[in-house]
Image (cartoon, rainbow, N blue to C red; front, side, top):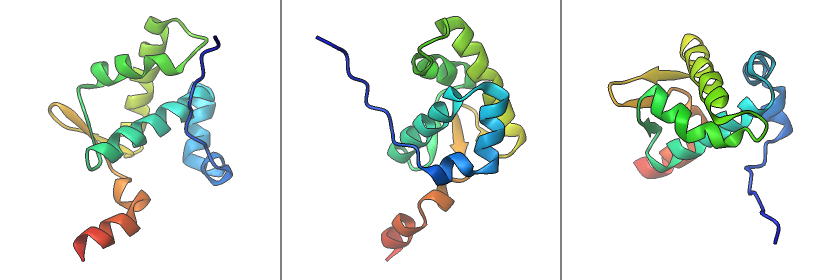
Length: 114
């Protein structure tokens, strides 16, 4: 029996985004999937991902099928610093806030406010 992985579909607009392109060029293509998974987790917690950078990197290490888990954790940890420098995320005490969350969900936020 073959394993089946369900990946989020990444649109062409997402791949054309210059910020995503810079992330992919710096840390390889699989890092875009890490960002999508981070957004998916943030959807469940109103724009917040629970855990420190090290904990988040450890839980997302499975996304890279070609790297050893310890190498993937280091790469994701460095990418989190990259994202923080570009103000995609904000480090909080025991969580990470996705800064662009309101931009991605303007329609849903407007519906909740009504």
